[in-house]
Image 1 (spheres, rainbow, N blue to C red):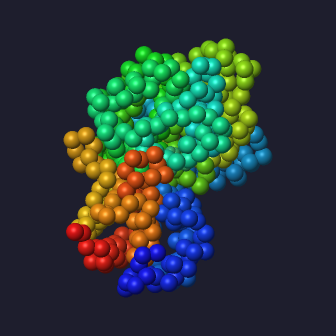
Image 2: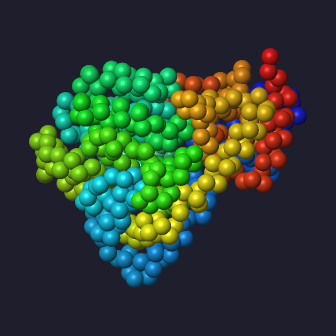
Image 3: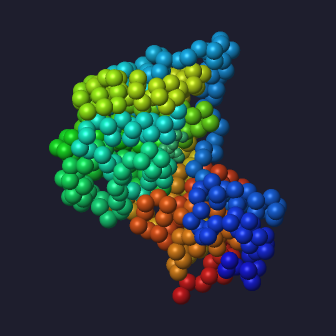
Length: 443
Ligand SMILES: Cc1ncc(COP(=O)(O)O)c(C=O)c1O
C-alpha cells in the first residue's frame, strides 16, 4: 500500500481497507474475478467509477438477429426438447458455410459442433486429444495465453508445457516448436490468434511453420479464434471474398478450430461456441481411444463420449440464435466485423494516453510492424513489476490484470482490456494517468 500519503484520485484509505478485506497476500497476483470484486467494492465505498480494464467481456449489445431467433425458438417450445448432441442440422450447415466463407476452408457439417462456449470446446478437445495416443500425454501452449485453459488442465490432471512466443516470431518459431515436438510427448498445441493478451497476430509464414510441423510430427493444432476477424488492419468481413482470416487450416489437415461467439457476435451470455474438427481428424481411427470410448473414431469419441458426458450438447435455443447469426453473416447481411471495430478505435486512443504518460507497450511489435489495435493491449511502467503496478493503479482508479498469470515472461506487464471503458471516461483516464505520472517521475 504505497500511495497512502499522496493526493490520489481515489481515497487511499478506502483502497487500503478494501485491499485488506480481500485477504490475499499480493493483490496484484489475485485472479481476474478477485480483482473485479475488489474494484466493485472500492467503487461502491468511494462512489467513484474506475477505468475498468480487468475483464475481457464484450462491451457491445448482442447481435440482434441472434436474440430475435432465440426468442422465436423459445416461443416454438424448443426448451422442452433435447437437441442433438452434435448440434442441430441447420447450425452445423451454417458453421460449415461460415468457415468456407470467412476462412476459405472445407469442413463437413459433421465436424462442426456447437459447444457451451468455446471454453467447453477447449475442455472437450484437451480431454479427447490426451487419450488419442497413449504415448502422447502433453499439450503445448504458445503463450502468453488465456489462463483458464491451463486451469482446465489442472482440474483434469493433464500435463502441459508452454513458452512465451515473443522471442520466437517468424522463422525462429520452427526450431522452438521442433524442440518440443521431437520429444514425442506433445499431442496438441494451443494458441489464440489474435492473441489474448498480447494481440500478436501470427503471419502466414508462422501459420505455415506450425502446420508443416503438425504434419511432420502428427500433432493436432488447436487454433483458438476467440477474436475472429478482429485484426482490423485487414478487412476480413466479406463472405467468400479474400482476404480471409488467416488460419493454420491452410497448412495442415490435423486441426480443431475453437470459434467463440462471445466477442465477435457479443453473445457471451448464452455460452455458445463452435468446435470445428478437420475432416481428416474427425475420421481418424485410433485403437488407443477404446481405453475410454466405445468408438475408435475420433469424431464419434468426441461427440458420443466426451461432449455427451460433459453436457449432452448445447442449449437448444442458443443454437438457433447462432444459426441465424451465421446465416446473416454468410449471406452478407450482417457485418460482424464492422460491429466490433469500435474496440480497435478505442484501443488506439487509450494506448496514446498511456504512452503520453510514461507507460510503454510490452508486446509492442508484430514482427516488423507495431502491434494492431484491438480488444487488448499490454502496458508497463518503468520501475514497477506487474503486481505492484496493478496495486498502485488502484489508487488512481484504474484496474487491469497482471501478465504473470498468462504465461508471459514479461512479468513487469499488465493486460488492459478496452471493452468496458466508455469514451466518456477518456478525460478521466487522461487526468488519472497524468496524476500517476506526476507522482511517479521516471528517472
Ligand atoms: C483466448 C480465449 N479463448 C477462449 C475464450 C472463451 O470463450 P467463450 O466465451 O466462447 O467460452 C476467451 C474468452 O475471453 C478467450 O479470450
